[in-house]
Image 1 (cartoon, rainbow, N blue to C red):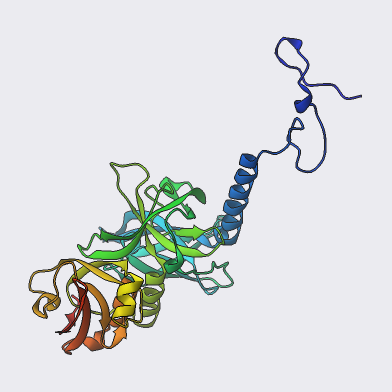
Image 2: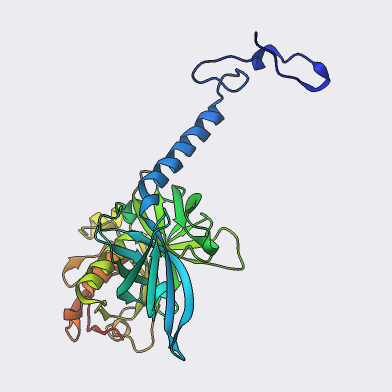
Length: 346
């Protein structure tokens, strides 16, 4: 015999809330609402992404150079294992200058690690844990992101390991100044909550691919957090694994990726429908000396199309230092071909 649930005043539940069994029914038998179905889909997306990436997220603890014979206590952050033999992506500001590094896996195992290389210019670093057969996460494509898209942050804020928050992509193409004083371009803005300790952890799309590396928050604000795009990270980690640092040339511009109208693109025969909008030029920069101005849109560099800031970063290799490089810009609806001589990044 089934006993009806008690309701205030001993009343009998209305027919639509009587207990039933069966797939899709609520606790009291109400038909699932469209809102409930949406929430279920949202939950499945978040849970699926966490299951795919969570096992590869580690807690990173560091100790600084020894003082009086004892290692100086340092900070902590998060990291993402991207190869089974222990290579881990994290933030430069988490491990820069570290004398000792310890990573803790989600199940609690602590493993010593060493810094392979770090790049303060993008606030990215690679460390290696001395272990094998570690779980990994797939690196996605940050260029495919759209504003409003669901994203999930996984990390270890304030020491609370394997913490998950969710939000949306709030904006794309932001610029962020790192602790080294350099601007990182094409940064992802999100409202997925981040706190100290999230730095270096992954920003994950609903399909379970990593699209960014969480790096900063604005302490005086709520819901304004930033991540380095994974496409930038892939370029940087390749350099760090090969040389321990990123050797690059610079032309002294800060910019962000912007769309170009299809009409303009077709009119000028461009191979891209986006470019790099120049937001600022440093004093005595090679770009300024070569005739580039604020507001120009860079659409070509060294004979290659430039569709975004990642393209420009990839083309500004160390080999370009001292070479007069053709730069194509869009200015006031006209195409201009300029010559710029990059210098080596300090």
